[in-house]
Image (cartoon, rainbow, N blue to C red; front, top):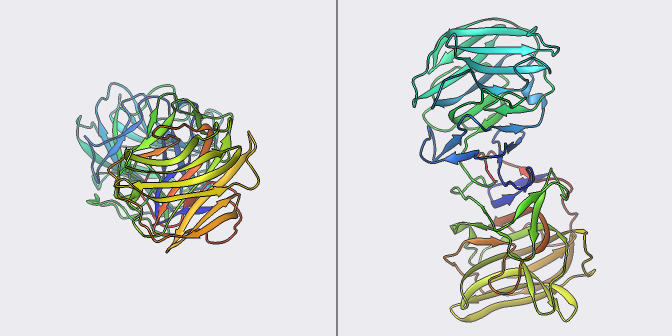
Amino acid sequence: MSGIDSYTKLLLHLNGVDGTLKEYLDSGNTGHLFGRSSGSTLLSNAQKKLGASSLSLGGAYYISAPDHTDWDFAGDFTIEGFFFWEGKANDMFLMATCDDDATNAGWLLNWIQGTTRLQFQATSGGGAWDVVSVNSNAFDPTLNTWYHIAVVRSSGTITFYIDAVAAGGGSDSSSITGTGALHIGSDTDEVNMMFNGFIDEVRISGVARTITVPTSPYVSDANTRLLLHFESYDSSSTTAPKQPSMNNTAQLDTAQKKFGSASLLLDGDSDYISVPDSADWNFGSGDFTLDFWIRINALPANGWEDPAFMQYVDADNRWWWALRNNGGSYEYRLYVKAGGSVTHNRACTLNPQPALNTWYHIALARNGNTWYSFQGGTQIDTWSDSDSMPDLASSLFVGAHSDQGYTDGWLDEVRVSKGIARWTANFTPPTSEYTKATPMQAVII
């Protein structure tokens, strides 16, 4: 389902493995979602070739996306990226869709320490490199130096390029198909020989590209199958990096999810996510939409509120959109206080009343001076209010209230959209994860 566009300022798919919160969305035409390995896979601002950051691996981590036909090549192709070696004591995998024993069908691009060469191999599985195996000329990278590495097949000729200079190769026109996930920084058995260093601006194309060393981030085109800028910390395409933080025991839970592989589990005691302050949270008097899926484990006590979104500076400057128990009747309430004055205090009664352990889609949208709230795609309230939302110097909190409660349950597909009221009438709730609608940056959440 398309849902990432120029209006999307935050999107938390909340996928991964239990206890982690990192994911990357590519900027190519498909929008492949990468999960990270456990550990310290992260973006680094200290080292980057283009843009504000790069992928830091350290020889022990990787990212991966599920098997897809975008990783198969019947004809011409290009695989490229920037690589920065911090160590080279052993062979290292740059990218792969198979393991180093050729167990499953796929391909790999690695650097061989013993012969100091790049190697591209493909297999149909069964333990032999029976599709293709070609090597570059000698290449012994200097540590702590960025190199642009590319492998190009053009009309049956495979050529390696190092900083846009041809560096050997061979001939092969075989169809290359695979059954494994695409790994960046490792092969698919994830045992050893992971890349030790930084990676930036990875691109896979279904065309033989003319290789030059890029001086600015690539822009996706019709032939782009994968594009990872390694820039933002969320699934937004148009704004500066944001890095959500997991607080207390907030974690991903694979046992419950609406879409994908996991959802965010909050214990109702002290758990929440925080995202640094941004101009994206300054809605002013403009259009915006907040939407998410929630599965409630325990409802709030009478008079208490369990928030979905909140910003808080102090008691006189705060806002939230929260589930409230109003004398046994449950509602979502928008409360806004700026400079000591309450400007919004709207209760939207849920209908039906929420049941435990059931997924509900909840949305709040502003269109001009008209506001709408929805439960399961059905409008539950609408009202008119011209007051602006305040610009607060505060992180955006997901699942936390300043003084009255914490969400007890699961959240999934949490999205903030600025500049658009996505719904102004009844609608069918999304049936799959949101994906990109326009070219966008790689993401990490």
